Image (cartoon, rainbow, N blue to C red; front, side, top):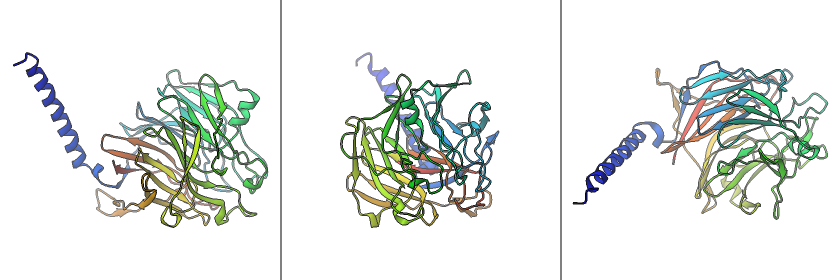
Length: 386
């Protein structure tokens, strides 16, 4: 027998044992089922807010949140609260944002690929004030030093940063991307000339904000849409959103139900064509849960009638078909009573992938966009087997 054979046998056995433990762990918890659970939060829980910004450091399991609005119209003032949630300990920490950090909502928030820096860029004030409250600064938070620094930008870069939208970081390159977004808080803002951006932009620590040279057609300009980086396809996806199509701001045609992806190797946007009648429908604020080369998962959003959803959909990238998924209800562990998941809008959220599942966390948010709507402060986790 080869002298290395016993060593190899031991290694193989240990590897098999680890795999067996992992598989058993997955089969014993709910990660092999579509299920909800409420996350018990500890520590210094952030104040009530909605339409704030989120960024997740997947290397260190840290969830950063910033800003938002502290109530519903007409009592919806922006805040500059800056907190971090440790997923492993389920505990919040107040990072004590300095007074120089402007309170605002819907700010682009993203991290570098190592999790050393948190960036904030753009954002807005509250709507319905009768004047424009938008921002074009880009700031960086040093996680180790706990210090904020404003990034020097040219006037052109400031114009690029002047938008309210979501930015998505690509783990391989460390670049962050944004598409379209709004630049106005005026009444009926989508009808204001230039209020919807039409470009795709990227950010890196060396060059700052740059405008991408897109090859071919881009999606319809929009706001209140979300982005997702699919690593296996090296593409960024977006679904639906809010656009300008009529003299009204809450018309059915203002809400989009299309799916697009940007191939980062070619800078080409492509629309995924499907049977609209069999999909999630027109909505804004729908969020992505997970994606690979064969599928993507989508959750929630709201339509032109201000109806919020917390439904979950799977899109097959090979057949171009949508399937609505059945999710196990949330059950109180002490009473055994089913608890409905709140259909919130403007929630803070992040997605996390484990060995056997994709997880979607959301916390806080508003129950409706209507004046006087209550805010919630609970956190929930959705588990999707993969």
